[in-house]
Image 1 (cartoon, helix red, strand yellow):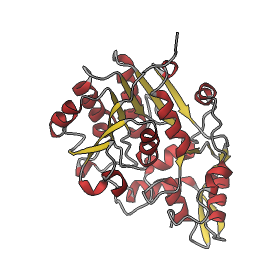
Image 2 (tube, one colour):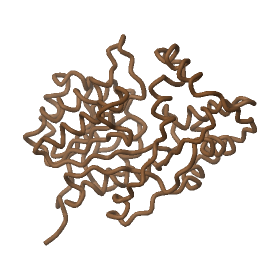
Image 3 (cartoon, rainbow, N blue to C red):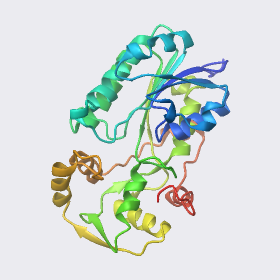
Image 4 (cartoon, helix red, strand yellow):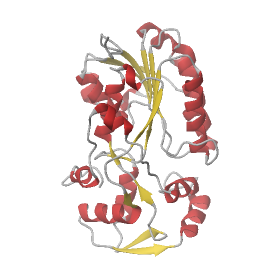
Length: 313
């Protein structure tokens, strides 16, 4: 008896595939020969190297409007859905909300494709919980939805994903903070984080498509090193060649700034982001790596990928 879940290459629909996580996950899936259909808002979102790849196609549409992609997805006849959409922040006045994109758009996509699907992978977050910020609760509700369905699923709950990238992500925000001679530190920066490499996350996605042992399960995805926020900021400062001094500032000050200015896209953080970050984003669940017989990267190995890179400039 074999643990293999599938014996053929998969036909995968991906929502959120052109974002920071998809930038790492899709090349890994292509290595295994899967065929991919992306939902994108505009053709300009598709990297040129993907446009010439026969294993990738795309459809223009809006994740919150299933009618915009229904025909293309049904014609593709996917057996797998991967949902990577994750909002760093919401903009209710522009109708961009966690409720719509973390939860409802996921429910709509699963409902639309459920007759053909053999597998759903949902990218949640380590902070998902039934009570908390809108980010946390909508991720948790999406988890509960797929758990209660009769569809084969895997839920991944990454901590803080890191990789050199030109896209907006956590490391670029920290890089911005280190440019000043006096670097503001959230409180004493003593809260703990478990950064994980995007390459390790991509490997987990790829493996979960192959074997039954990853089915009907949720897994945390964490790196091999736990560190304080202060240590992470210091290491990013050093990698960036900066020499600024870290200055502890009460967390309440940042929360007030986030509450007042966080609604503006040019401001680097929101009240909710500060709340989640300063609770700590850490996990002690390493089961996925044991099942995969895989050693995730340490913090030093992750940061070494940034050395000489201009992706966080």
